[in-house]
Amino acid sequence: MARVKPLAELIEGCIGPAFAAQGFASTDILAAWPDIVGARLARYCRPARIEWPRRRRKSTDAPDSGTLVVQVESVFAIELQHLAPVVIQRINAHYGWACIGRIVMKQDRVARAEAKRRAAALDPARRGEVARAVGPIADDGLREALDRLGIAVVADRN
Image (cartoon, rainbow, N blue to C red):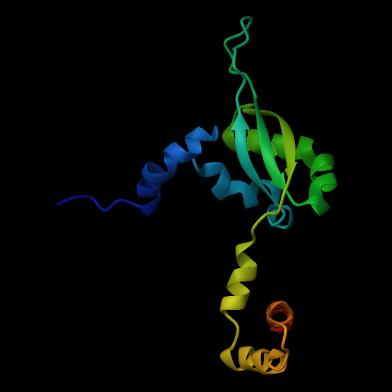
């Protein structure tokens, strides 16, 4: 009888090559990111790729440190810049060797799954209230924008 494999083993084989193309040896840094930087900062930034140096140092056998490119919301870029030494130290402690030497920030939007989950978990009755409130608006673009805003407001109340 075949051994039951954990899902993590199967996923690593499927998406491992895609992560390797971005410089990640495994998907572990993405999964551990909230533990490394903290939940608050993890909501606004995520690792994009690791850039490894092209040549090794000749004087030692120790591997060179890489550069972690982090995608960060513009509002939190300054905070991440100030916390960069701490984040580097935490990443290196997580892996047990000095794999990251510096962090480069790329300002961009960071998709947050929690906002999508809140909208999906919205009570249908509350959703109907929002739809009735914006229904009479004639302009399609305005109606859709107010509908999204209403759903966000109602979801935050819950």
